[in-house]
Image (cartoon, rainbow, N blue to C red; front, side, top):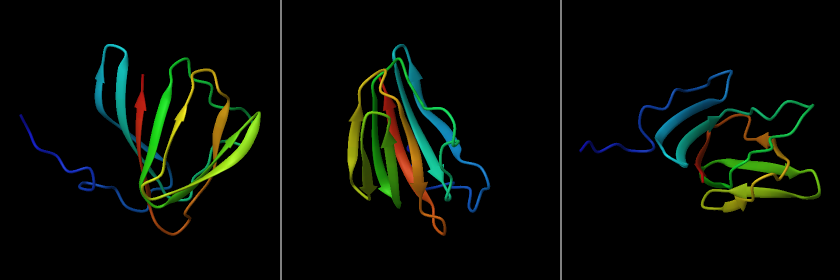
Length: 105
């Protein structure tokens, strides 16, 4: 077994959002996402066939949903997004990293 820290080995000031698998097995995937002011493309929506639970470990973000109000998230906040719910990231902190933990199940 190997101990790993979620806040270590973070690439700084990337011009692209960083997606890193922590665990991917059978029907469950746990992922660390690092954003530096990125948001989802203007056109289109994420629409996963799996449920998606996301938590902000550091930073801030706003999630937009096609058929409901935006949700502002800050450190410690989490949300469960049911499968087939159209959503996108509309904002993350532009000057600091936002670190997400995402669980797809």
